[in-house]
Structure formats: structure tokens, C-alpha cells
Length: 46
Image (tube, rainbow, N blue to C red; front, side, top):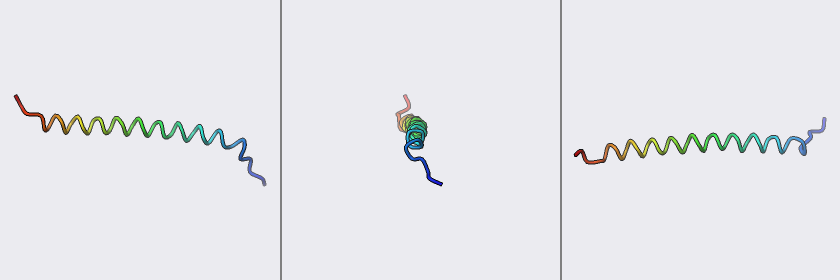
């Protein structure tokens, strides 16, 4: 059975880009949260 790469590729490309967008947004918010907690810990208490 021949696999149809020409029809499959745009779909997989779309899924991959959506997946990486989700991971990127999640990772960015995680890093932001991490740096915020570190800076709030290291901030001098007035």
C-alpha cells in the first residue's frame, strides 16, 4: 500500500507547528514564572 506523502505532509506540518506553539507558550510562561519567583526572593525587603 502506497503512502500518500503529498497529502500527509501539510497536515503533519500544521499539527507540528500547533504542537510547538503550545510547547513554546507553556515554556515561556514557565520561565517567566521561574524568574519572577527568583527575583521576588532575591528582592531586598523594604
